[in-house]
Structures are given as structure tokens and as C-alpha cells.
Image 1 (tube, one colour):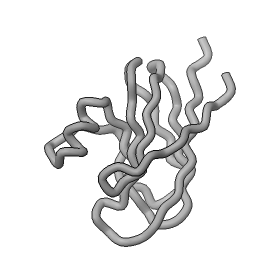
Image 2: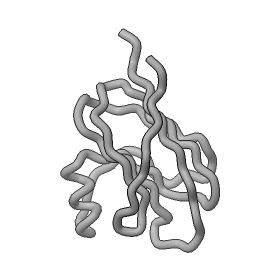
Image 3: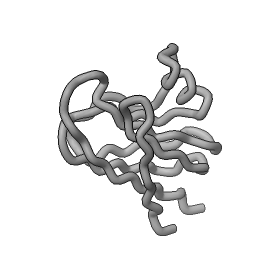
Length: 101
């Protein structure tokens, strides 16, 4: 399957995009600019992130691009890119590649 690109929206000092994805989908994030956090969250964990509560995620802090994350189970997922409170700027392009069955 051809990778699908995603558009971002700006929410709580971060870039955010959401999509329904199958288990095993590879999310690739191409970054330009400052090192940053790349997080893969369920919608409920994104809501916790947005409210400043404790949340669970896949990913972390990255200094090099591209970042690749594997979707652990099927469902709706949110990709978040933020600077973790530090100064700087970042732009990103996210693509999704579904697993081949």
C-alpha cells in the first residue's frame, strides 16, 4: 500500500494529527528543525496529555530524523510532535504505511 501523508493541527503547543490505523502500521515522521518529542497516543491518552495529566505513549525524544514507530494495535491513533517546553521550531511530515498481508 502507498504511504499516506497527514495534515497537522496546532493543539496545546504541539503539532497533532490523527488517523485510524491497523496493527503493524509503520508511522514515519520526517523532522526538520529542533530536536523534539514524537508521541503516538490513543485518543484517551491524548486527552490526558492535553489536560496535563499522566498519560501513556509510544515514542519519545528524538534528535535525528526520520523517526519510525510501529502501531501496536488497531484503532484510532494520535501523532503528537512537541518541544517539551523548550524553545525552538520544528516542522514535520508524517506518513503511514499499512502492513502487507
